[in-house]
Structure formats: C-alpha cells, structure tokens
Length: 170
Length: 295
Image (cartoon, rainbow over all chains, first blue to last red; front, side, top):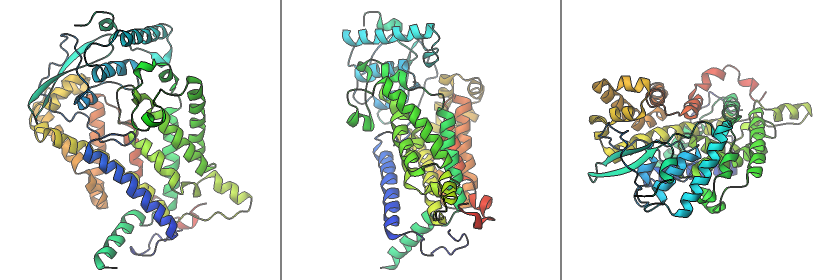
C-alpha cells in the first residue's frame, strides 16, 4: 500500500503505462468538461449548468394570456431555463413544441401528441404509478430579459398542453 | 527537463496522487453504487420507450447511436434489470471490473434516456461522469467480494496503493467544484452582477411558489444576500481544491447553496448533494489502520 506519511515528491507506485492511462483519462474527461463550460455546449452527461442564469425582472409569471410558439433558433437557452420536468414526457412534449416547431404544429404532430396524451390520461385513470398526476393544463407566459441585448422574449412554460392542442392554432 | 516542467510534474502528482487511505476508495465505491441503487431501485424507464416517435429528439451520443428512437420497451426492461443487478455487484465489489463497466454503459443510456424528449436535466449528470470514471480506477481491490474470494482460493491479489486510491476521489472533488463554478460563471457571464443587484432571485422565488421561498421573497434584502452568497460560493468553489482549510469553508457553503435551492425553489439536486461524501476527510477516518489495507 502507499505510505500515508510519504514525502510529497516520492515516486508513484504505479507502472509507467498505468500512469499514462490515468493521466490521459483525467486530462481527457476534465478537458471535455472545461470545453463544455467555455463553449456552453452540452453533450450529456457533460453539461455546463446554465440553470436560472438569466435576469428575471417580472414577478408576475403566472398570467395566462395566449398560446404561442417560439422558434427553434437561438431559443435553446430559454427553454433550458424553464421549469420543465424532463422525466415526465408530457412536460417534455411542450418543450419540444416550443423548441422545434416554427409556428403551429403540423396536423401530424398534433395527432401524435393527442394520442400520447390520451394514452397518458388512460394510464392516469387506471392509476398507473409511472404516469401519476400529469394532466392539468396551464400555459404560462414568461418574460426573459437578456441583458446583453435588452431584448424581451416570450416563452411558454407550463404543465401540459391538452386543451390547446385540441383547439385550432392562432 | 527544465525546472518549470519538473515543478509542474511534481505539482500534478501532488494534486492527483498524494496517498489516500486505500479503504477510502472502497468506501466511496460502496457509497456511490449503493446510493445510486437505492435512488434508482424503483425507477422504470420503459414508459419513455412508448412515447410516439415524433417526440424523439436525441441528444449527445443518442443522436449517433439511436437516431431513430430508443430501444424497445422489452429490451429496456431487461437492460434496467441488468443495470440494477450490476449496481449491486459493483457496490459489493463482485467481478468489479466487469460490473462497473456494465453499470456505467447501461447507466449512461438509462439515466440519460429521459433527456431525449426536449429537455436536458443536470441533476444526474455528475453521476453519469462518475459512472464513466470508476471503471478506470482500481476500486475493486479493496473492501470487495473479489478480494475475499481470492483470499479463500489462496490467490494473491495485489493491495491498492495510496496513489491509486487518491485520483478517483480527487477527480470527483474537482468535478463537483466545476459543477458549482460553471453555474456561477454562467450567471455572471449571462447576467453579470445584475443577477444579484436586481430582483431576479426574488422573482424566481415568486415563480417557484414554495412555502419557504414565498416567505423569503417578502424580504428583498435577504433575497439579495442569498443571491450574492450563491454566486460567490459557486464561482469561487474551486478554492476548496487548494487547501484543506479552504475546503472546510467552501464545501459546506456549496452544500448550503444546494439545500437553499431545494428549500426555496423545490429543485432537487439530491444526488449531487449526496456525492459530497467524496469530500470526507478519509485520511482521518482510516489513517490508524494502514496494515489492513485491502483486508
């Protein structure tokens, strides 16, 4: 075993090849983490933890106004800061709509969403524990102010989108 | 070799390979895999496989390996069973090299599966990194069934050196500090000091609507103080790696930030908090029993 009282610069009790493997591993993995922090790119499980980093100037977040969808480009950081529980698919469906639909979702998407939500409702009614509790509908509008540009963007956060999806788009 | 290069090499080795009691790595292995098993024992990932294909938005390695969608529910069901067994085997140190690799590969797939539907979560990301890291370590050489079985068979299993015990523990400490540093840096980079001086934190508390958060939100000065404390703690958390004295300040401060987030915003970084056991002063807990290393 290693001598716990050893001097700081004593030779390592590891073979040269083992040292190369360990040092290479440390440098590679930490390098990827640092790259993610600098570049603000995320490739799970390597993340840069941007949660709640935007300035939030308006406390009245829960005003129900109208349903809208923001585009895909440049909005990623917005939805990533929104309070959506990713482990529940119904929340995620909303995030996908926000992120990946330029405009109102296509008929095919709406049909697919409806079928999934219907399936979830049935499972909730039968008290399937894997789907417990996700069927209330609330759509929120949140104003995120980006100090760099001063631009105010609107983004939807919320719970599920059952009602909105069964109605015609704006 | 020039003096500067030599100094860098000595510093690097001091940081990563200064001897740590070998039992520490065994204890960390048991706590990590055991804790992950307890947390995920009841988890069922198969509902995610039944979500319509239209919602599959693969990220990271999923976009390369599974661009068309996740594996079937039946396959996922088997995978999660094997994963949970491998977590237990890894904790016990049984066939440790194989079981840690299996729990790493399957764990990365299963834990990350939910992040392919539009939202990437951060709470379990560090667990994923530790799942990648531990198979590279020699964590199965101490406090393991592998060692016990080898002794029973009369085989010689080399003991774990203090140098080998140190680097995996130190790696998690660095990664934990980078998590906090990154969160602090992002706040400063995106919002600057406005994140502290404006009503941002107070407004987030109003948004989250937790009983404690709403009480705190009634006190604007307290909100500013908490915002300042959070950003300072996060940004300067790597100082905990510099010395044990600083660690005694910054590690509890980091835990306080996670606890505050949990209480006032109802955001659960439970496993990140749990991983702070890597910061325990292992040399104090085990230093009196050096002869028992690997026993």
